[in-house]
Image (cartoon, rainbow, N blue to C red; front, side, top):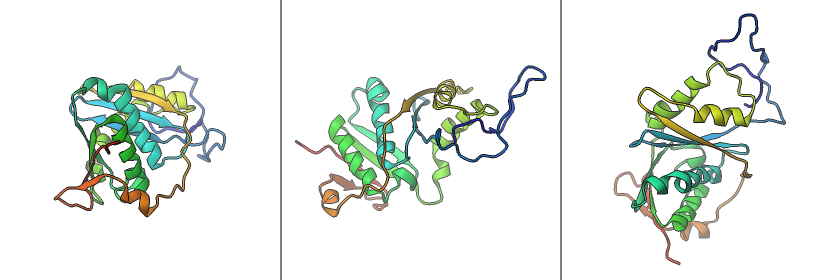
Amino acid sequence: MIGNYKNAGQTWEPQGCPVEVRDHDFMDEEKGKVPPYGVYDIGKNEGWVNVGTDHDTAAFALESIRRWWLMRGKEVYPDCTEIVVTADGGGSNGYRACLWKTELCALSDEIGRSLRVSPFPPGTSKWNKIEHRLFSSISMNWKGIPLTSHEVVVNLSANTKSDTGLVVNAVLDTNKYPKGIKITKEQMKALSIGRNEFHVEWNYVISPRSN
């Protein structure tokens, strides 16, 4: 939540001048919550955080990946033909989410690359390296500091570093992502989805559709 709330941890302050925060975490209706969506490049040890101001939906998740590709990915991987995405099995990028797959197809068409998606099976998402190598470092960087605004979240995320050389970029996403968007069976049939031989219920490839 965004506001002058307690954030676990300690920071150094001038003696006798502690930072005062609220003792209850009732949400500020004006400031609301912030859903940060992360992209972690395992090979380069780079993090990308899209800090949203609206709902955490499949469209928001896909826009986060799209921004990473347009602002960073295509620069460092100009010759790639396929992007491999590992993700949690549930939530906005869940393996059952039809809107997630619809948005994946739209992104594949836009950038002309295939997207190979491998969600973590139920109960195993904590093995996702983004938890241990990106968001854990971000949490340590902002411990003890009240997250009073979206700008504070963006700046603290972007200033995160680690002993292993982690570098983080962060941007603010003020787009609206309404909830409750339904995808029809006809729309799903029009998608270009190829199933892997291994655990077809989870692993699939999205390919660009020819115009």
